[in-house]
Length: 540
Ligand SMILES: *[C@@H]1O[C@H](CO)[C@@H](O)[C@H](O)[C@H]1NC(C)=O
Ligand SMILES: *[C@@H]1O[C@H](CO)[C@@H](O)[C@H](O)[C@H]1NC(C)=O
Ligand SMILES: *[C@@H]1O[C@H](CO)[C@@H](O)[C@H](O)[C@H]1NC(C)=O
Ligand SMILES: *[C@@H]1O[C@H](CO)[C@@H](O)[C@H](O)[C@H]1NC(C)=O
Image (spheres, rainbow, N blue to C red):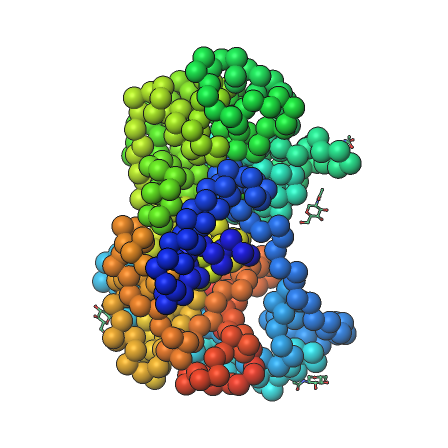
């Protein structure tokens, strides 16, 4: 995408200062126009292209149907076209037993990189996925991993979430919402901004039914008529010198609905509602438990505005000091009740046309509340490769941009939270003839001898585009991105729970190193041209 290429991240350092300056100005204008929605449609409420139109088409491989029984269920899963594995793969697995403490009874230190004396991979099997043939019984040696206990099962009826998006995007986002919202007692209100689009047969009742089938208490609403909103906006505002709202015939942009959500949320809030969470449709919470724990440390009976800055200081300079929408924004009910009657007026008065910016202006202009920054919420203005973040041992409360600026299968990654809570992204180092690091739920990385010892694993590796000083305040001090020959990665491709009546239940993580990812100069490459899979089979 042109804009992203221009986004300073791709610029050659050797360009002359003049060219750089001209491009920088163009970039600023472009991004600010982008945020204002004049160049690209944007549906995440903050005016950014939160997700490119559609995901890459799934690469499908035609594998022949096999007679029942020919392919053991252990391997069959790998034949799924979604994984797009090559015909022949190198496969290995470990069966994992979790322990919640050391033998002496000391609780697990989640933030330490645990040193495991044995190797992670103990045997490898070549599997032909077309015929499903493999030479022998596939071993699954047991490995004990010290992890924190599972989160307590809780209900969260005091949390109320809101999102403004498009029908198809909400339909596509169901698995992600289900991951953290299913069976929690928390409610979701969605404004479906394009529901009345001509020629569509969008049906909010059936969308609600689809969410409810996944255990989500969702209510989807059509947007309030745009005309009324704009008309009242300009009527309510005595000093409206803003030119965003002077056209009564244009539909209200999604950013306005993102802000108008506050009214819908206040309307459905009950006396037990404590926090209103205003989200983008690609805001993702690994688990509601730690989020709720954090929210509980703030007084919901007082006006509060909680959120996160962009992690990119250039964005902060450009858009200001506010709770960036993608990270998730939380209003206590007293603050939301103060803002709700001002909805139209605040839209009309806003100096910026993004949902999070309108909210910022409204809070500053009409209340004495200031932003409280909540560590762990992430706007994630990171492009391309966010592995440095996910491999750093962080415990994110929220992540964002995982379907667009970078691509990672967050619901599959975070599925392990069900099993052992904070063990998501917990790190383990394996010895025994190879330096291997597991970042649980994200990656298994093999380093050439000596490399791992030379790394400061307390620092985030600057793997994304242009990891320079604008990230110092959020992620610094960074360490340098390793070249491909210093790091061979198996990334999580999928995960699933099995629930069988006969055998014990298991949780499966499929980590995948694609042969096509190999750099030709790679020294650590073992099997040229062969996809490699490491499966971790967790006892549930
Ligand atoms: C693991 O080993 C490294 C040195 O190899 C050491 O610095 C680190 O403290 C150890 N971690 C734990 C949790 O013992
Ligand atoms: C896998 O098995 C199929 C069917 O037996 C065979 O045609 C194919 O050549 C095998 N692939 C490889 C890479 O060995
Ligand atoms: C919603 O998504 C599912 C698949 O995830 C698809 O089968 C269904 O047709 C979609 N519904 C609509 C109305 O687009
Ligand atoms: C919407 O879906 C519901 C249930 O799925 C169905 O009963 C209703 O007739 C549908 N409405 C329209 C207008 O198609």
